[in-house]
Length: 137
Length: 137
Image (cartoon, rainbow over all chains, first blue to last red; front, side, top):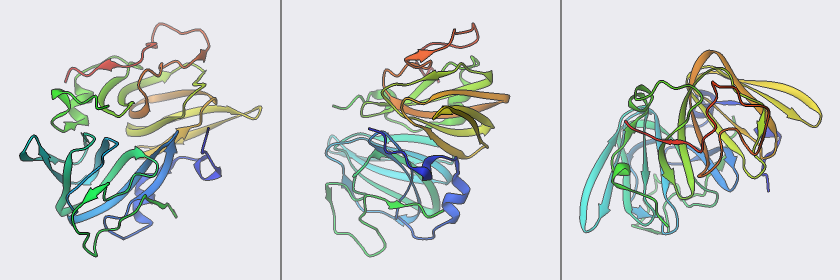
């Protein structure tokens, strides 16, 4: 079942997509691939610890640098994604993205995936709990 | 069901991934997201007209410029993706990617998706019919 609409009939420049909003930690859906969303977000500072029980989550850093802390097998580690690098957080793994100097990121995850996961710590005001907003570019 | 392996435990720089192979139109799998692959490919010249009957196909241009000709509703058109732009080819739509000056691209598609689709014209020697190769970076 295709979800394509007229909005999807032309390529989208990521620079245009990022220029169309200012909100941090508030993903925009740039296109869909079957039952998956391609989302972009501007981020700065810290997100919350959270986990997606039913899905992996893919990150590509378009600008800036993103860190992702991970809790696996009782230990905590942090991976660093410079611009132009990719990483997939495995299903069920608690993680906390953060970007002290800010970053622009692209994510790939099933449509309906909540930005704060299925389990999370208290959500501060600067983090948007969303399944992704329409892109208004 | 996670497909994560030790190879997926660290971020991958796309520049390193692209530097690890020279073959054109021969996608490498950089990571998996549930039952989907994230693939990268170097391309130059023309691919073949083909269609994926059961899936959309996502393209992000990392370097260079990619064109994709599309046959929809009995008409043919071409979209152009400069560096940093994205496009999803809808399921079932015949398409032919080409890049006269070359490009480096990233794709999302279900694991097992054949690079030449389920229907295609005769495959020339410079096009690799593959479900994606392991990245050897």
